[in-house]
Image 1 (cartoon, rainbow, N blue to C red):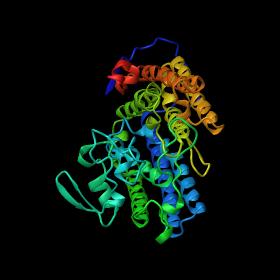
Image 2: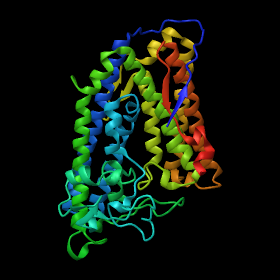
Image 3: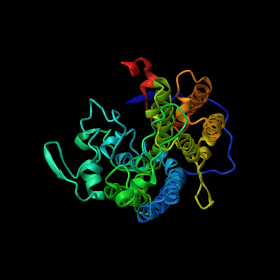
Image 4: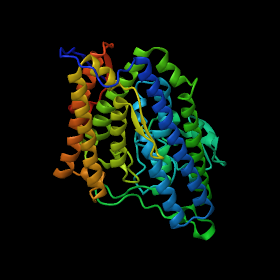
Length: 418
């Protein structure tokens, strides 16, 4: 769903920024940022792939924990890429392969009794790991060999049901952590390393197939990120699309900022879960990493506006930015938006700090948790506020009116409970 935002022009005195940028320079630097962020996402996914290989080769508490740490590290650069999604078709068409959620995890592996019931998804309890042969859409599937092709071509979004998430970060997360059965209580998933062990040491059954699924999912994640990194390299489709027409490229940048800020993050990822008091609505629900997921989304929004990014090796990227352009047209809008972007990052940092101090995001969602509600709504309100200024930046640059993604949780709250 989308929310139409009217771009009202503001009349304020103009001032010249220190660095005067041209639209073509700004969109080229934006493409450079995308290339760097997807490059870092690929590098960390490759490290995860290696850690998964080590876990499979020698299952232990240490190798499982190392694989979990690699997954958490891989989320840091990837979440900062989500701002490229909504304004760029090449990303939006692909993103569901790597970051779709929430998922009916019973499609993949064993789950707690009674938790795989979904009246809208007959495959919610399929358990492919325990079922080498099964029927989808009237066709018998031989899943004796669990491969990337089986996951991407047959299982992912099987029967057109979005909850049948079989690939990407969250499928891997589930296989490493297992279900989080704590509800809004303390604690994340607690899969034992013996779920990957051989012979009599195996728990959960089908440890060889579980290992095969995890390996195939990690391999598929790497190949999917190789594809996206190539889209932002010289001559890639993503780079070509945003640089061919600088004004269209600027609009893509602002569309990505506004849609992630408003409908996706403030709405679907934050306020909706709070309204439902449902930990199943948290983004990284198995690992209790949602506080980081939200924080790096917010950081990515601000980075696009300021033309900056801190790479995983510590390298600082800066260059011609949207801020430079807006400051020339309307210094007040630029100043206000920068202040509001800082405020949203600070509000998300407050959630991150609280979670790292022992109040996990799913605990914040508990009905009656006033501290948790205040933290989440502080970020939601900050994200909504900055979206209005993103709209003003669109107008200041003389760009077309833009549709930003919306959410019933923000636009029509009563519909959430219908």
